[in-house]
Length: 263
Image (cartoon, rainbow, N blue to C red; front, side):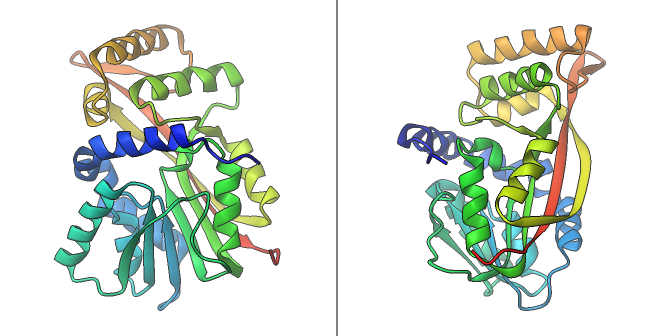
């Protein structure tokens, strides 16, 4: 494994500083039903210690806190953490706090948490195996490690096409993984997969671009690629039009695993 470059982490900080407000306001990110479904799928015990890696605006962390867990939200970028802290104060959650930190060097020396979770973040990491290794390291033996993230086609050319769309839209995107590769990472990291849930999100193209503050030049390239995809089925995102508004699908996987190795 190799750690991510300082340059890429600077890009992540830059993107999520400029996107902080729009990301936090995104209905798909703050959707309470989706957050509740994630918590219910993990089924935490009251008082469980939970770490939310790459917490962003803190919604996942807050969802676990609201069912009685003791929660820490960790993120690389100060701007979304400031919003997360405002949200925590507004909800009066005393069992939740936020901390600046790197997913590749999680700042706990030993297993500390019963549940370690990360949502929509792995595709921003240059070295997802290192991140998952760190998540497993700070999780107690028999604890749960949970990833919810974009997945792409098992066919390399189709996966590359979708990742190109994502990279043009947001320069901090590295690579969303096919499900088989994501599951293999869990095994490498001593995590036994117990549950896999897949679904899809419907994305409105122009809102998706606006949320990331995509530059006009890059947005134009995305529109051209989406149009080609609509005509030729090149990625599996299945672009479609409704009264000339272009939408497409993103596939999402939630993988819930148990730590079976003492590491």
